[in-house]
Image 1 (cartoon, one colour):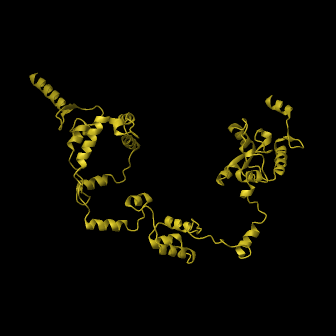
Image 2 (tube, rainbow, N blue to C red; image 1 turned 90 degrees about the vertical axis):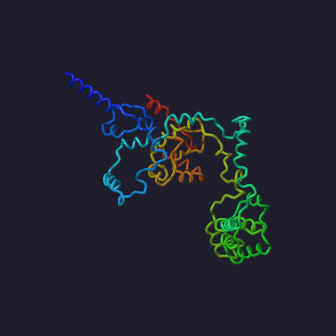
Image 3 (cartoon, helix red, strand yellow; image 1 turned 45 degrees about the vertical axis):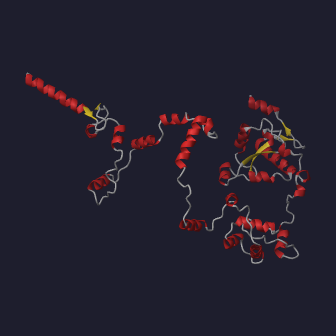
Length: 384
């Protein structure tokens, strides 16, 4: 019996030694987790990840500088991973670990807002003095009395060669403004006007920024086109002197061109600033949706709404009698933006056209004066 008891005791000790281990870093005992497997438990040497990271501090990974050809372990690992696909569970774990934990997020939210504040407002007068004293002690004596050698100065010159600094940096250096010599300005004007060179080419020749050359040409009364740096071809030309200008004038003859003298009240289609007037309350999202569903397409070009989206056209709701305060189904119609632009001229024609079109489709009634005639019996039948 005694022998059997000793065996039981030995078995208990063995069980305890398997269930408990001692950490190699801190020396504390730790128990086996319920979810951990036997392989994980046998390979485990530390009680927590903190102890593991402390043990690895200052050490490098075992596979640094090793390849398949030099080490067999790396070769075996690479062969195992050939064709291996990461599971969705492991991917989710990686995504969760990549995100910031809640503890860090809460600490970031509770940080004091120091943007736009001085040291005195944040730390107080006493602490700011200490911080400034520490900074002055750390920075003093490092570059005091030192200057660049001739080799470093030449390197800086080569690096900055061809660069164009802003007006602020030039002002700091002592150059209050760019001052070109007279013979340089004459050459630039000659290259631009007579030789027909581009502004960018002139800037490359003189090693200046192209914006400074634009300024020189403007100061001397020369007009420039900033798109390509050349003069426009029709400057100083008329119908009598050039055939191209004559052909362009003949093409544009009869076309309506809005000039400064035909804006506002002087415009031939001026309608007492009707474009600035507000819409009524009925002209809302539900009303627009109802009319789009009713029509299903642009009522002039008969193109569906899906095809209009492919053509990158917008859908507008047009008032037939051009009165924004009369938003009713009998007075509104759906049009695309290109067809809507056509209705701004010959308004009487378009009102008659749209009213005749709606009478054919929806049996709406209109008077001779282009006013809507409400059919009350029809409304009662629809509501009833």
